[in-house]
Image (cartoon, rainbow, N blue to C red):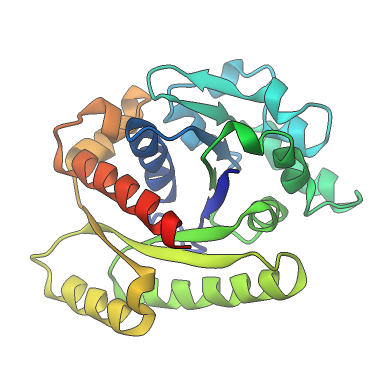
Length: 256
């Protein structure tokens, strides 16, 4: 059975999409079967996985409105080694269309039930706001991976997210938990980042992943080539860190 994880943080610009596509590629490289779901109308995770969002015949939008199954809508990213349930601008309209529908927050969960056996991991890239789309992701997931920068304001963002997860856990999804916090764009030369990193470890303990993702130019360049950094430049420090993170994730699942 697949482990379904949301990559979420209510603060924008913290590297959610970078984390989603690189973790997907890293997990594929260590022999896992992966489905990456893009729940952001911008479609950046779709494009960053080598799939052209403008040419999608079916997308996550069709799945949420139940006019298509995941098996029909997913596409294979041969370059990256994982399946993609893509998103495009249509998804922005789903917010409004879902409001009046039954089981509106459980639609992704029901759709995933049909393909769970096909995968070891399902990773969901969530938009930065707490929207109906994010709620669908949180209701479908077993847990949340939180990418965050080691900066002061990031701590506030995590507090908000933890409260949101508690509410969803209490009311909609009893399985939901925080899997771990991933420190991204880390620069060990900056004293503040080291201090915040230590604060995180002090507060969240073993919920903080051991792997640190460094600030890395090659990771930042990769999306313009429509690839995760792990595929674009496997020898870069950022790519190697994400493969190490994928291995740590596989190990952590065994203890869950």
